[in-house]
Length: 212
View 1 (cartoon, rainbow, N blue to C red):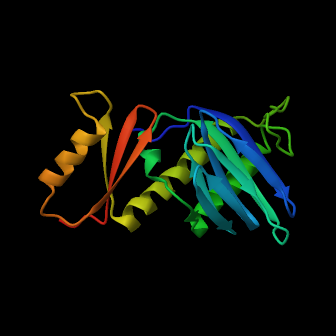
View 2 (cartoon, rainbow, N blue to C red; view 1 turned 90 degrees about the vertical axis):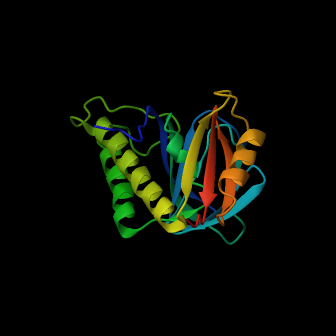
């Protein structure tokens, strides 16, 4: 069975209410951070970009990207934050906020429900396992997260009609300038835009709105 996406280990789950004028200070870490807005709204800043998130919005923050959250004096927010490790390069296609479908929201519900069967609730930054967890509950939590991510990736690729090329840096002389030259020469007859994104030691090139 080909496993196109895997969660290596779950670091934390936070299910929290944020009040008016809440500010989460800027931080950077070497794992992914997923945030889902169940109710209300907040602003998420990732490096130099700000995203206004509202109910049912989802955003994934890549490792080693500085980020923060804040609410203004008229905002409140109830949200789910999940932090995890993964070596799956395909996660690099998830850029910006994404509105979850009804089916995808059931994965969120399943994650919360199953997490309560294996971790002390309410969830804090450091997950505390229950003394007597339900059999298989931790594995199911990771499985539901993977299913959510796969569904969102499918939707992203279908909607944007993107083609993603993966290059290992320093492999066969690949570097950004060389790859940019190859794109312009090999695909000169096609209309498209491309975005470079460095993901650890992987360079992802996303060809946006590619027309054959």
